[in-house]
Image (cartoon, rainbow, N blue to C red):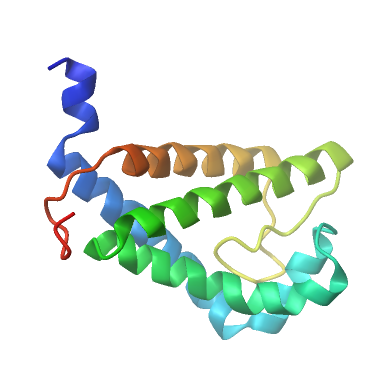
Length: 151
C-alpha cells in the first residue's frame, strides 16, 4: 500500500477531519439559526437568488449545516452529510467568485450575521477551498471506524 493510500484511509486522520469540519459547520450554523432575518439580508446582498427564494434559503441552509456537521462527527449517514457539505461549499465558492468578479465587497455571513463581519473575498475563497479539500478527503475516505453506524 502506497503512502498516499495509507494517508487517505487513515482512521485517526479521518476522525480528526470529521470532528474539525463538523465543528466548523455546527458553529457556523448557530448565528444564522438564531438570526434568520439578518442572514436573509446577507443572502440578498449576494444578488444571486431570486427574491422569492431568499427567506426559505436563509431558514433552511443553517439547519442543513447543523445536521450535516452532527452527521459527520457521529458517523450517522456520514456519506450523505459529506456530499451535502461538498455541494454547499461548491455553491459558496461560486457565490464568492461571482461577487469577486463583480467587484462587490460583501458580508460573508459565514460564521456571524453581524454587519461588522467583512473580510476579503479572496481570503474567504481560499478558506472555502481548504474546507472543500477536507470534505473531499472525507468523501473519498470510507473508513467505518469511529462511526455510530459503522459504515
